[in-house]
Length: 148
Image (cartoon, rainbow, N blue to C red; front, side, top):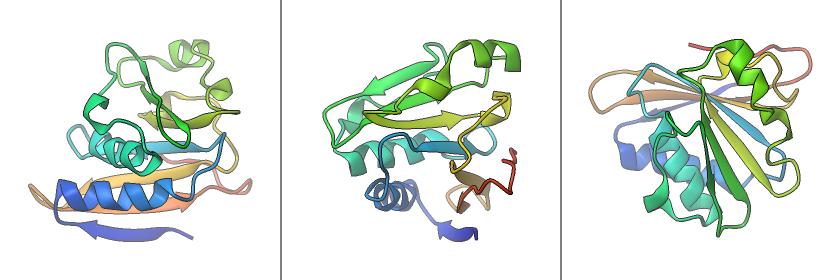
């Protein structure tokens, strides 16, 4: 069942992600959806902080495609598929990343053909310049992911 939070600042968004990070286990996939500038990378910074990885290194991996942040409880792999087609995204082999030692956070997951059956969907929607609705839901085998 989806849980909806209202964030009134980037700091609140990061705190929400920090709390989620404490529940993550190796192999978890976090699918981040939302418009450009909605706060997906800010959410990933919170995940890094919650996992104990260096937050100041987290940036949008738009041109490198996948960033890796070590030093925390789990390795955080951060992929941004905005510039890719579905075929190119599938060639990355993301389904194997993080299975043993980390978690995978994917921005623009609509480019993926396959996601983990129990992936965590995080949808971020603009309310105004500083506020967002953030919906968090773990998928089940009965539900397919949606992207916005």
